[in-house]
Length: 141
Image (cartoon, rainbow, N blue to C red; front, side, top):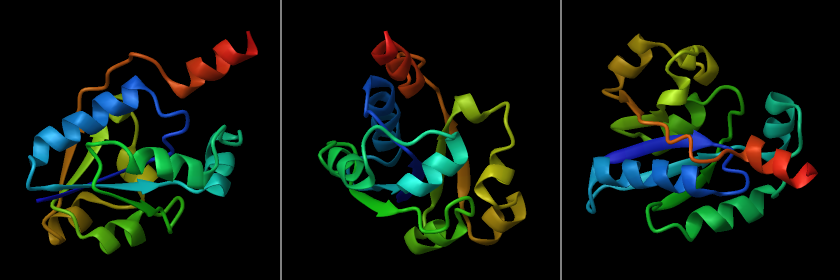
């Protein structure tokens, strides 16, 4: 079982860890959790701010997380299909914070595209423990 998830994972924090732990639980110890990590350029374009940690720093932190098996680059930017096809997952996991948004449009795929590839999209409970936005706010003091 291969699980794909993607994101920026800037300022890796307990909310991220909680989400990645749920990903691991979903696929078990024999499954793989693959994180597609957004580039610095994409983050700045999408969020309007530069990441606090650069791509290599964020990648290294994720690689040290016990719940992550591999970190790949989100090579498609706003179109996540190239990275998804590279991983060929059974599952795509996203937090429930996306439930009220158009995740399909954001990722650049349709339900048919997922169905044709045998991929299941799951929403995992979002733990609003802390966010990178809140960390930025605190740093500004």
